Image (cartoon, rainbow, N blue to C red):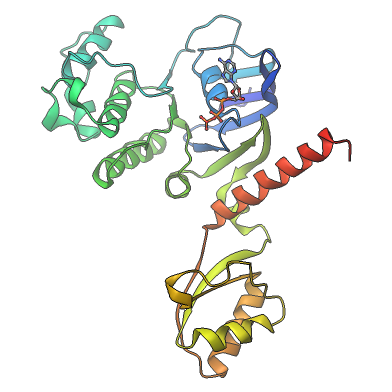
Length: 320
Ligand SMILES: Nc1ncnc2c1ncn2[C@@H]1O[C@H](COP(=O)(O)OP(=O)(O)OP(=O)(O)O)[C@@H](O)[C@H]1O
């Protein structure tokens, strides 16, 4: 196997009864890469993460993790850490006791297991002696990450790690994941938050109904040549709207007045047509006060790709 690959998955299929959760999935994750997994509800993200964590086995296909083929046994491959559906914690124990219990279960010496360091890294040092019963979702997520750090993983698998995090918590988690990746740990995480994915990941895989609709660098996805919706705030919204309606390559979606009492104009266009519109507005004496995409390029690509996949599946079902 390629020594740079932390994950090599080929043709992975997993069914639950009649439900095909994963349908011929290929995935390559290189060493030290933060790889995002996105997709609508039920797309198969959790199922795929479960296979990586050894919580389930694929029905068919080939999976190699950290250079070792994954067999039929339900066990976490060596060097892999992470959690699904939030970390499992003992509510009556403190944050520190939870980590110590975990280290002891692994047979580690709890004094040298790096517990203080792990708590510090995720920003929970101040609440180390508090029982986790009272922890918020974001605190539990961070403690789960601290638990994963204890084993110095080479592959970290996380399901929605930024769920429930306040800005400070998010900063800690982003910082930890970025540092781990810099040091060579591969990270696979699922998220519905495009801003987190854009901030963290170099590559993403988009899943829809068990199939991959895109996998590759974020830059490639963002640069794909597609029309985006843009919000424009101008000094004369009514004239701007009339001008946009007649401009080449500019489409006005049904909800073209994007709120704020008609002060915002929404147009759909490719970048060259948008550039041309801006020049026309200014030439007509209309000042442009704000211009930004309604959705980020990743969000727009995600919506377009998953909607296209849904339409294709519906056509297949009806035989058209
Ligand atoms: N244990 C199970 N038994 C039966 N069906 C399951 C099981 N686990 C997952 N599924 C089904 O497999 C499909 C994929 O589910 P999965 O949880 O992997 O999606 P997901 O992308 O993680 O969704 P979400 O974003 O809602 O978490 C869904 O149709 C789901 O109902």
